[in-house]
Amino acid sequence: MALPFARSLSLCRWGAKRLGIAAAEARRGISFKLEEKTAHSSLALFKGDTGVKYGMVGLEPTKVALNVERFREWAVVLADTAVTSGRHYWEVTVKRSQQFRIGVADVDISRDSCIGVDDRSWVFTYAQRKWHTMLVKEKTPIEGIGQPEKVGLLLDYEAQKLSLVDVSRVAVVHTLQTDFRGPVVPAFALWDGELLTHSGLEVPEGL
Image 1: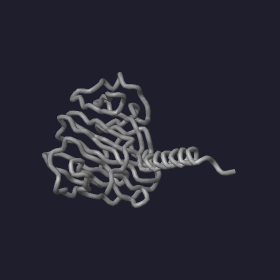
Image 2: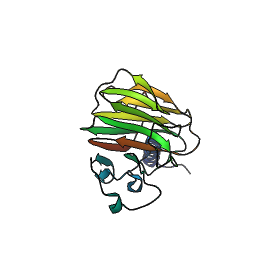
Image 3: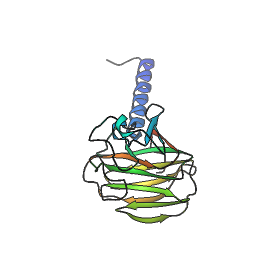
Image 4: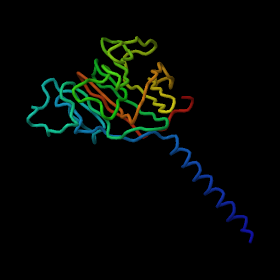
C-alpha cells in the first residue's frame, strides 16, 4: 500500500535525521573523565573529574586511598576509558602550567613509572617553552606551535598514530608513530598549574 505523500516525506526526513545523528555519533570520540584512583598524591581532580591540578606538597600519602592503580613516584593520572579501535579526538586547556605531558599509555603501565620514559606510553611534552615528542626517554623537538592555551590530540588506533593538533588552526602539528599492543587510555602528567580535558568531541573536518 502506498503511503500518502506528506507521510512519506515526513518518514524520509526522519530517516535522514537519524542517519545524520548516527554519522555524528560515529565521528564523535571517546568521552572520559580522569580516574581518581590512578592520580598521584600531588594531584587533585576538579570540575567533575575532567581537570587536574598540581600541588607542590600534595596530599599526605597516608590520607590517599591505597590501591595498586595509583601512581606512586610520578605526578601522573590516567583517564577512565580505554581505546581499542577507531579515531578519537580530545582537547586540553592549559592553565598556568609550564611543564606537562599529554598522550596515551597502556592501561597496565607500571605505576612506578612516568609516561614518556618507556615503550608503554606515547606523549607530547611541554617544558622550558618548547614542545617535544617523548618515547623511551628520547625527545624529538616539535616546531610550529608556541606556548599553548588549548591543544588537541587525535588518536588513530588502527593506523597506530597519535597527533598533536593546533586548535587555533585546526591543523596537525606533529604525528607520533606508535606501537599499540592492547588497550590504551589518555594519560597526563604535570608539575605545575592545571590541565582541563574536553572529550566526547567530533573529529574536526579535515583531520
